[in-house]
Structure formats: C-alpha cells, structure tokens
Image 1 (cartoon, rainbow, N blue to C red):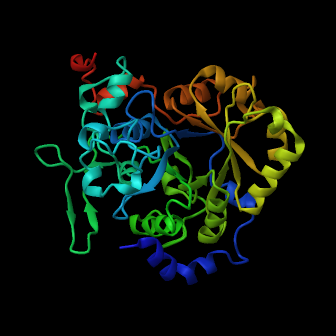
Image 2: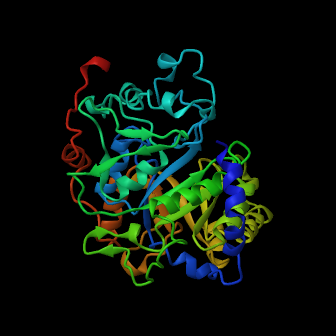
Length: 400
C-alpha cells in the first residue's frame, strides 16, 4: 500500500486547517521546550548501539529531556529508525543479505529488517563498551521509541523474538509491556526526517502515526500549558505541549512541516558543518535565519564545527536577536559544553546554545548540575544505569 499517496488525500483538509491564522506566535511555541534541554542523540552512540532499545532505555533512565531519532521507511511502508541511507555501518546486513549491503533502506521489507542484528557491529567497533546483551538488538520501528519513552519495553517471546501480528492488509501490530527497570522519567521525542524526495508523504505519515500512538499534540485533548517539564527530580517533557519536535536538513522538508503541522509544534531547521569560512559572512547567516523564520522553525540546529564554527558567538547573537533559538549537535566532551555554554553558572549563565544534542547524556546532565541550572537526572554512573537495565554482561570475549 502506498501510504504517502493515501495520507496526502485523506489529510488534505486537516492539514490546510493546521496552517490557519490562529497558529501560535513563534515565541509562544518556543516556550514548549525547556531551556538547556538535554537531547539524547540517537539515544547514545557511546554507551550502547545507536538507535536501539538499549540506547533509548539508557537515555531515558539517565534523564534525557528528549530522545533523538532518524525516521525512514521500509519497502512495505513501515516507519523505521535508522540514520544512514543503508544498513551497512550498523548492522550485519552483509552477512544476512550478501550483495545488498549498499542497497537503500527503502528496498528492504519489514520482514527482512527484523532479521538484522543492530548490536554486534557496535561491539566490534567499541570493545571497551561491548556487552553480550547488545548482540541481536533489533532495528527499531518508529513506535518503539515512543513506547520506551512511556516506560515500556518491546514484548518478546521465550526465544527473545519480538511479539507482533500482521493482518491481511500487511499492517503490523507490535506489542509492548511495562519495563520493570524504568525509573519514572518521561522524555519527549526529537524527530529527524530524511530527504522528502526519497520518502514522499513521510511528513503526513508521521503526523498520522503520532495520532495513532497518542503522541500528536494537535490531536485529542488539549495539553495544559501548566503541565511542568519536570516533576520533582523526574523528567516530564513527554507529557507537555513540547513532547515532540520535528527537524530536517531539507528545505522542502521544512516547508512540508509548516504545511502539515501548521507551525503549532516545535520545529528545527538543521544546518550542516560549514566547510569554508563563507559561513561566517553576514549574508549567509542572514539568509539561514530568514529561511528558518519563513518555514516556521523556532530553532536552528547547528553543528559544532571544526575549523569553521557552526555556532560562533556572532551567529548565536543573530539567532537570538531574530527571536529564534539554537540547539547544537553533537556534544561528546565537557570541553565542547564549556565552549558553547560559557563560564557563568545559574541565572547569570548566557549560553550560546539553548539546548545540547548530545552523545553523552550522562556528561551533559552532570555539566548542567554543576552549572546549577538543572536538578533532574540520575546521579548513577552510566555503567550503573546499564546494569540496572539488565545490560550488565560487560566482557564479550568472542569479539575482542
């Protein structure tokens, strides 16, 4: 079934209404996200295999405000979570499907995707973080991350295979159960969509799936503006109006977000690592800011940069002067945090970045604790969190 075409037809009237004149002002929608948000990049790429159940459970229990993911689509129209254009880097696709390792994600059916091991490649590349329990981690479907954010895990049978049904129309129904190790944090979801030309109708399909999951802030009962981002020492972002953010590098994709979500949900325009110092020119950054505002974004997502900084003090000042905010990716070290946060603590702090998209949620939360601007978040070590979640088999002799 070609869902993109179906969704476009079925949702046309709704989507037109979403872009009506009663859309909130940019500043109001910005308030849907907590300041100094901790955004768990792919769950983690350091402590567990990226974009897997292990990575997202770890990020949730550690206290991330958002779980960041990349959405793509299978040949049979199932939304799955994968960053690259192929399965080659993060799975055993070369062994399971010889000769197809360079084939695009969209050429694989969900049945084929469920055969892939998304954990063993991490173990081989990261022997210090390798764990036996990472072997056989699944490629996730879109719904999985939302259920993990709710405190659930994938339901499995006695052999460890995930439980699901498939109806006569080819629609999958995946099952979940309560996570006995979840600790009460309820993060939001930070959704990155790939190039629209590859997946036409993807924005409509995401909108529809969010509604089905009970996660679409534009559908159902209105969420109170008084719902706090934190309750005591627990993250509560997943219960607020800011529980989802959509982002993309694609300019047509940003305009699709505006059409589909009507500027009523958090949106971020991503820009890549500047390759030359042309990026520092006023006309370049002015045009980026102008497009972000035109497309209804409240945030600009900027790269750390190497020789050419993706978020210089001058660019950050211009972003803020335009009434926008900046989230920076991808944080790996305390030195990077110090650079983009600045020297002050508490109310005196004036960070360049309003949120950090981090591979090290543990370090970023600790950093914010030290700067006296955050209370929620675990005081456990990353290893203790993994052990609590059942990933305590540290040595994997077969791959060392």
